[in-house]
Image 1 (cartoon, rainbow, N blue to C red):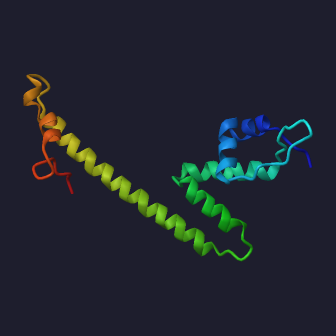
Image 2: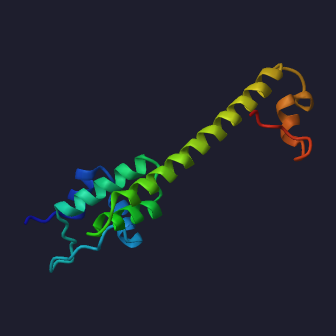
Image 3: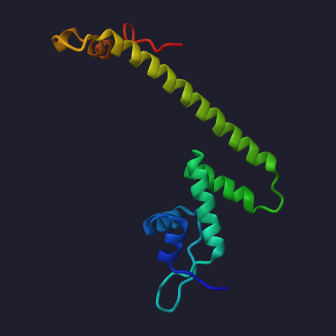
Length: 142
């Protein structure tokens, strides 16, 4: 089995060396054995694991969630139901964030439409809305 340096792994996966070291510190990948020279020796399995981590990140999973997915993945008795539950929870979280962003967008659009764009800032409906307390503040659209 050929071994790779941390630089070679970083280039192949498309991430920085410090990112790999960070993942080692967080326990997402095991610290590899070292050569007599002190250089880390990585293998193809490390590359596969790092690619998995990067793909999971692009789907919105946190490092804690990724660690959980990796842990389940490595258990011989694991069932895909566990993975589906985690992914379903992440999907619900993403849906909630999208809904919140849409409400924020609608509210801000209304405020931008109300602002004439000229005149003194003390008459700006955008600033006025941001200065209101919770009782009279901007209500996000439903």
